[in-house]
Length: 220
Image 1: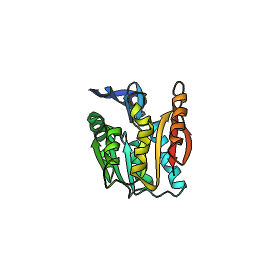
Image 2 (image 1 turned 90 degrees about the vertical axis):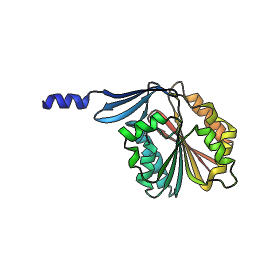
Image 3 (image 1 turned 60 degrees about the horizontal axis):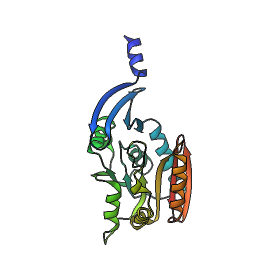
Image 4 (image 1 turned 90 degrees about the horizontal axis):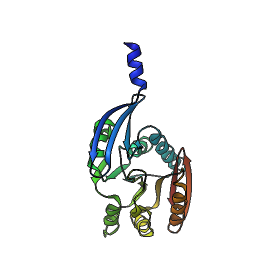
């Protein structure tokens, strides 16, 4: 009986499958007794994803950056929201997620509902930011997270000069943007090109490498 439980704990198990009109097949897998979200055949939440966001938000703390209001575009199962809550427990968060199925899974299997001060909007991220930027009274975010993926690709709408200009309209004076990009072949050239585009808009760009990902910080 004990051996059976240990084997079950170590074995990868699919505990939920959903077919989404947006992301296709979505799987929740238990690995080492912890949930992982798999979309487009790639890990999207849980495991190493948690570590990269903890490291990124810890960098803001190290630099003594205040975060009272945060926008998370590509909320997923909330790995970033948990990291923000850990280091900035009083921060108000707005999470934007295009897929209601992902939010349902996040609340059921990833305890997303336990994150305090988090409001969720179901919307396409670039469109949502365009709407915010066009308002007379714009929302001023101290932190904007960009983690919007469809499978292994960042939608083109999130890589344009126009999009980055819209971000500057909704950032606070001391605000920061953090964009998560894959940094393994064949994604390295895409990431490097994106950094060059962001350099045209933001006063300062810093980079943080974590595993297979590159975190791109845009500051003023």
